[in-house]
Length: 341
Image (cartoon, rainbow, N blue to C red; front, side, top):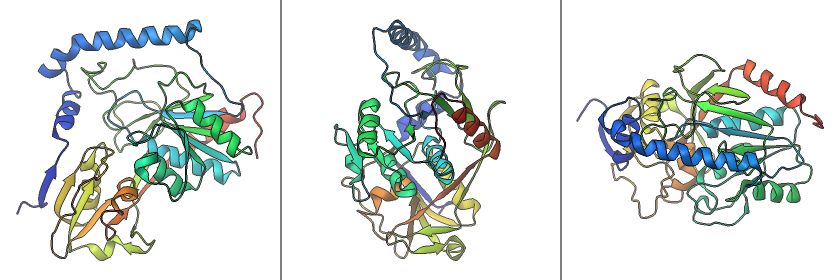
C-alpha cells in the first residue's frame, strides 16, 4: 500500500481542466478563442444592465454578496458562515439567500432543519445547520430575498451565498473570495478560471487559503476542528483517531486540501475518495473496509449521513482576520438608512 493509502476519484476530467487553468499551456491556448466569445457575451449582458434593458431588483435591507470571479470554488461557503456568525454576534437579524446549486427542485423555498439537501442544495443546508439563520433558495435571488423578508420581516441584513455575477439582484457590499490559486493563468473561461476580468471593482477582497497568490485584501486562518461530529451530535476527538486507519471522503472543489489537513493532524488515511463537487450520493455505496472509520467534510455530511450514518464529519474552523470584520462593519454602518442593532 502507498504511504498514504489507496485513492479513488470520479472527478478527473474537471481536475485536469482546473490544472490547465493554472498556466497558459497547450490546452488553455486551444480554448483561448472560446474565451473571447465568453468575454464578449458577458460584456454585452453587463451593458444591458447598465442601459436598464435588463432590470436589477433591490430589497429594503442591506445585501452582502459573497462570491468569486474564478470557477471551481474558492471557499465562499465558509466565508458566508463566518460573516453570518459575526453579524449575529453583533445582535443583527441575518438571513441568507442562495441559488441552491445542484438541487433537484427549481422553486423558491425555505431551507428548514429537516429539509432534504437534494431539494435545497448541500451548501444552503449546511449554512442553515451551522448558523441557524433563515435561508431561502431560488433561481432568482431577488425572489429568494423577497420571500425571506416576507417570512422573516425583522431581518436586518441579507447575505447572498454566491451571486457576484447575478446582476439581477441589487447589492450594497461585495466580498470577493480567492483561494491559493489566485486568478490562475489570468484568462477567461474556458481557457482559464476567470468568470470576469480581474481586477474589478468590489468592496472587500478575502483570501481563504493559506498562501495568498497575490497581495492586497484580507487573510484568514483555517484549520480542522479538534473534534469530529457524528450524525447524532456526539463529538469524537481527532486525537483518538491517530494511529488508526481511516477512510477520508470529500465531494468539494478541492478534495486533496481536506485530505492533506487530515494528514497534517497525524491521521493515517487508508483510502481517500475524491468525488465531484456537490455529489448527490445517489446509488453510492459506502466503502467496505473492515473496521475503518469514514471521515468527511461538513458539507458532505448533510447528504452522506443518509447513506452512511456512521460517518464522522470534520468541521472546518475558518476565521477571517479581525481587520476584515472591522472593514465590513464600517462599510455596513456607512450605508444610507442602515439601522444597527
